[in-house]
Length: 332
Image (cartoon, rainbow, N blue to C red; front, side):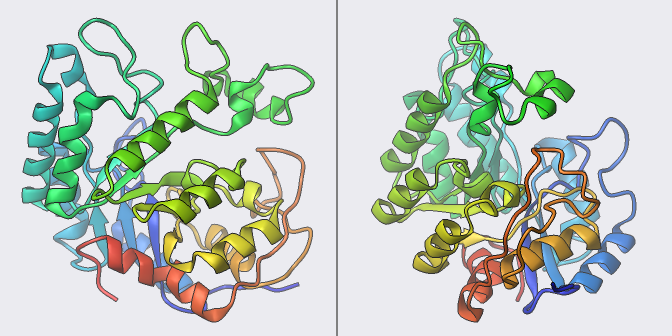
């Protein structure tokens, strides 16, 4: 068994939340200096902050991170989906918003899972990721040379009945709002992933980074097919080592076959050394029966994971090289 306190090469955490979007009060990271100390201790050279939002909130994030520590942070913006309620032409308005945010300093666009689950137009019709009215937004991302980090759907169990057959029953009982199994309100997992696939294929000039193992940690066959047949889809591994670590041989084979398509990330906010050590151990060692949470709490399910022991060239690509190639504003 190994204690990997630092990544073998300097890493870039390409999926994290450092702003104010997901916390009730204040910043997700109370102290930037403490964060930099954590990064130094873990050998993490840079962070991608997915909480930029737009307008004044984007400016606040850029001031706190990117402008104060050039090269160490890259903040992604959002678009205001309430524009869809304002009538036709919202795709063009969202594209204009993205352009303004990139001009201000945003390094990419973050699209959350509310697209496909909650976002509705002026006629109260649910908007799916591949809705043609959003084409101009994706074209703008391509024109501006910024990636789109997109989270579509959620674990398959979140779309299945909440009963004794659901392997994540305890998690869903703890977080009932994470359940999307009501077909009168939400699309199915398969419908969302089919929409995501159509989106990626219809916009080959746009770089999409599928959050959480390409949004398909439970269906690596889907991800393998997409990586083999597209050139514009990439995947971060943030918050999905519990799923990936249950399929270590399939995961390793996929990452070795496509080393230029995966990005390191944690989705752990505020970031801490213990979480980084767990992910490093998963990527770098062949340790067996490893707790996927540092404290052993195993909140997603009662299982353990196995390490991938990735080759050095794959680790270099996943830890940093792919992020440096795709995300502007970061420094090696």
